[in-house]
Length: 449
Picture (tube, rainbow, N blue to C red):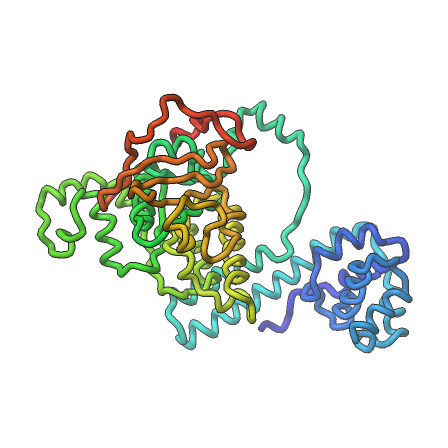
């Protein structure tokens, strides 16, 4: 670390003195939750902040006596120099604009964290104790955490809605008016893959959900997206073969034996535009979500990824999610993490997940996900693939925040390579949207820019 560390002791003292004055309950209730002990460099200031935060959390009136009681309860009174030391700290001159001091001391804290991160990066790079790619991924994740910690939260006026409409702004998230394409017309019209949220596809093993993931990736790439398939189940060459099978229209058996011909290669060459956009990230089963999230952010930054497809949810490592927590809780935290990264980066994110074994003998419902009920709550779109007792393949729209086609079923055929709609059970008339989220078909989503 350098000799001079980013800090502003006077700003820390002034802020604490201001927020600790009798009658400062309202401004303290607003500003204290935005701060943490790491924002204060001086040990006494850090201890006093912890006492003040406890008073605010307890919704008590702020006074020297409530602060003293809170510090005693936390075992921090000695850390401020006992009662006399606390009084001396509170005697600092208060300020008229404490919000500006919050910004200043948080900027100093971020400067310290960046200096520490730079020092760690330098030491690790010189020691050559890890691959450069792994080091870059870890640093990317750390930089994101520094950026998010202490991020300002502020409301916005509804008048901005009028300003947007007067300028004919498109009310959408991300670069396109959706997050990706299914390659199944009815799903693309009635249940578009959203951007800024994530989409969950549930199915029992063997129904073909991994093939559907590849279809979404390829069709989306054809429509201008830059997709990233994160593959944790299939070997690298098998994953390549699955994509080649779809585009070149030949069986996996022929690809594995190498018995395809120039005609198949010519068909694949016709997908040059999609091939130039799509990417695959093979990872090991059990890779922790924190590392996966860092890799996603790195790929977005490096390659402009705007659609992430993950195969599959239960292969994500839970070790670093919560010590001592059960699997359902750990998977729930991962689901919330997926929602957060989709919202923050405005990408489309599609994840495959298993549904319960007893769904083999019945039509699945929204609550049938095996790993966590968060998969029913967090995604913007949920679709289940299943076979009826007669063996017919169906896609059921279980949830759709941007439309009203909930519980509608679409009949499909799967030839081992791609999914297509079938005319069986075709309604004579297009059904009315169900639900209250939207009262008209999502035909506005039919195309991208």
